[in-house]
Image (cartoon, rainbow, N blue to C red):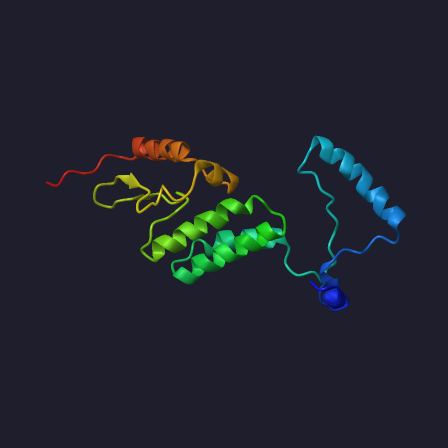
Length: 173
């Protein structure tokens, strides 16, 4: 945001922000203990209450993503993905998995291969579990892990577990 536009931005988002500290000293009294705690727990942060006028916070986006991912149309999955990314953008790292899963669902709805390997389905006729179509070569396991999804080996274990638990296919009479 250009410096000259900061007053306008502040005016637009004022109702979404917690009350500001009244002085630099007050701000440091709040920050210093948090900074010390972050030396030991890097994910520690200061959580300040938002005013009642604030727009939905990250938990709302996260929960809404899980609702829309159960839809049946392309736009349901795309909206779920967008909501999850909004939650991630607001600091809810746990929303990464649902963001990746909804993108996989969206791709598969379009008839394209999934890229993260979050989707498992079972054939109605053979009752065999699969992740296909799946482009396993696009992403590394390191990137999958960074994005909150299982590695290829972990996915293979999940698939084997599903296969082992599935009842055998019925033979035609």
